[in-house]
Image (tube, rainbow, N blue to C red; front, side, top):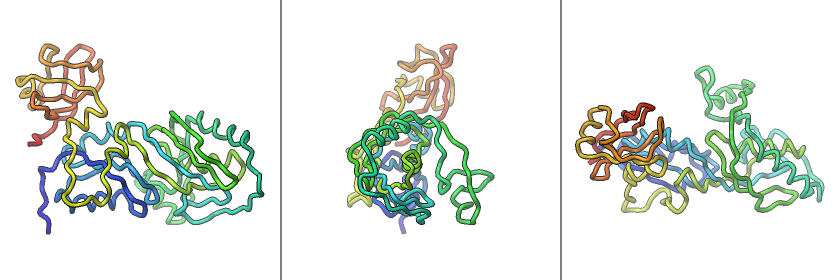
Length: 301
């Protein structure tokens, strides 16, 4: 049995294969790296593949900042059938035979324009969103009719790659909280046909991409983790500390502008970096020009 450690800190980007949940990956990472403190920066559905950012130890404190970044996906939408989960893993709820030539390019372009302009999206009922202390998917499985409220979303980019009567392949860059499964549902609704998500691959999660990703499960020897400071700097600006300021920050004390070098604006979260390059804390410069600790980090050595 692997002895669990509390000194494993850092980030590992993996290329999640299909057929397993994000929780499955986290559970195996705990066993492989011998630590209980493992999380991730954004769930991938079991069907989906691609970038999954694993967080170890103190890196779990970065979760809110890494999950808030835009994500890019390659997706395939299939026309002619709809499912309860809105993807290929779900139970078919509607089927329709579509005639050859039913989809004109002009019609498709208009429907995609609707999705590019979308600012509110109704999440899938089969999702982990919690209402009343229960997950939406648990209520669906219990036979309840679940209607979730629309949520704000943003589509930074939506590019058509290929299309046919059977479906479309697209690439999307979208905000946190955007469901590509819901995109498939809504695109079909605009076109007046049942549709579901047939394929999904996450290409980027914030500043992390498939170029950074290790295969999963990773080969022996285990790949090194990206240090906290390097990972945090992918999402947040730096604030460089002197040795004296580092000691004060570790005690949770406020700092003055002459004790730091920072490009962060007022009320902007930044990474506080020691002279040795270690992430000491996440902090903020107040309107008054004082620097205060928002989230302290344990020593990672």
